[in-house]
Image (tube, rainbow, N blue to C red):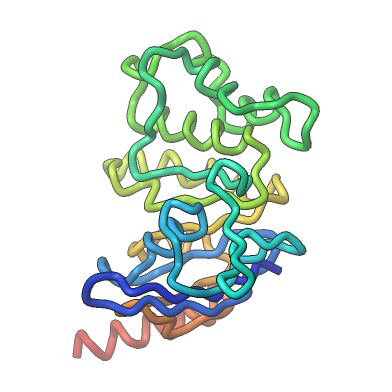
Length: 229
C-alpha cells in the first residue's frame, strides 16, 4: 500500500490527509480549486515539507516527521507530470525522453515510445510539437525514470477539448499496461469518470470521501443534482 498521513498549514487552510492507496491503478485527488490537491502532490514529491506526518510507498519510508526522515526529491523515485509539459526546449524529443532514463530497468524506452505513439516525433524539438504531443512526451519522460509513483497534476488543464480527448486514451494505456501506481489531480468529473480506479475527494484541505471510483462518483452526481434543485 501507499500510506499518506500528512498535516500542513497552508495560508487559510489546514491540510490534513490520511489515506492508504492501492499499489496499482490510478487514484484521483478530486475537488475544487484551493482544496489542497496540488499541495498533496507537492508534499509527496518533496517540493514542500509537511509539518508532520508519514509517507510510505510499500515498505519504503520517504518521510517520517517522528523519526526525522525526509528523503530529498531527487531520491524519492517519483515521476512528476505538471500542467505544462516543461520539456527542455534545446533538446530533441529523443533526448528529453532519455533524460534521467537508465536502460535495463522494468520500463523500456521502445515500449514507452510505442505505447504513447511518439516514434515519429523523436527528432523534433518541443517548439515543433502540439500541446497534446508535448504532454505525451512529458508522460513518457516521467515513465522512463522508472518511478515508484507517477504524479500527474492536472495534466490536461492547459489543453483544449480536442487535445484532452486525444490524451485520455494514452493515460488509460499507461494506467493499464504498467504496474506503476498513479496519483492524478483534477477538478474535472469527466476525467474522474474516464480514468479513476480510486477517488480521494477533498474540500478545504480535508478528505471528505475516499473509495472506489464508481461509488464516489455516484455520491458526486447526487450532490450535484441536489445543488441544481
